[in-house]
Length: 436
Image (cartoon, helix red, strand yellow):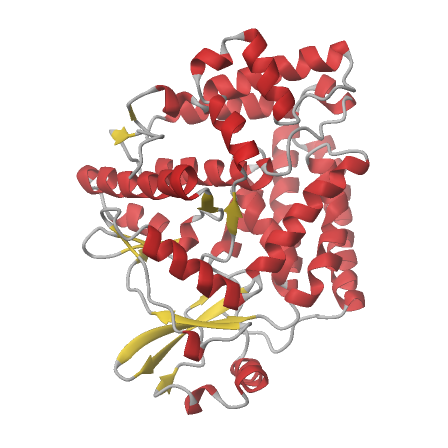
């Protein structure tokens, strides 16, 4: 993959790239309207989605940073975005054009005052992994193999302006309206800002690694403060395949079940006992080694779960509450899904909508053992997502629904469910409130 020598860092440069990308999308729509006259609607729409996904990702991968991170987040929404977008945006998880060697060395000199070769016994200037916010290089020190993550220049300084640029797209895609939308964007901005602070990431990584060390079949790298800074992070180099690659190359159901149990226990322990969770569960953040052990990486995005949100959120996983009209309504108000300003029509619509969604989404919590390879379960989620995405009633209402904490909690569960499905994990013991 060809490396890049520079990244647009100023607001004007980055805005110009977005405008150029927007122009390409406009041309794609002109082609789409022409194709509708000579081809079927489905073929024309598929071509539009494919071309738009290609051009949007092409622009974002040159910007890197927050704009590309948003694409990565959207790639996890398999039931919302067309498949063409999911496939292309998924590349942001671990396959992005890397920085050139001179730019890597320049970054080291900025934060350490010296070249990487003066810090490590050996440093490979060619990256082994490049994602949305940073890229990883192999190094050696005192006989140890290390992974050195380097943040792209300008990423931390462009978060606010990048979000301002992608905001109109998000507003349209998720039907968000009104001044209340700011709380959601502020939540995303705060989390992205935290992800660019590698000193904070090391601290969080060490805390979670220690707190979860007792969980069977999961490993964590060691982290090295002395070779790290606010924009450079050094840890053990962990050998293994990315989760999605491992599944393609193996067919041992017993191993899939064991890995699925480790992943589930890892998340349930964080959520229910630590009240703080790794909120970026995509395949690029997990490796599987030759002993079929899960390796958890990248703790830059951690979501603290306030008790005031945790309690009603998981009470809605109880089928008895879901099916109790008064209790269910009470929880919807506690979680800001319903508000005192709602009309009777809005109360009725959103009560029914969330009853439908939660009745399906919480199915794993209704069982002692769950089969995450069950395509019917994911099909039901997809059917609901498609139904409500096409709902004319939903579009006419202000769908700013729910506490800001839903953004990363729902992202965590959607990502976790998708990983469990990718692992084809069966016979997973749920025990969601057990203290591990």
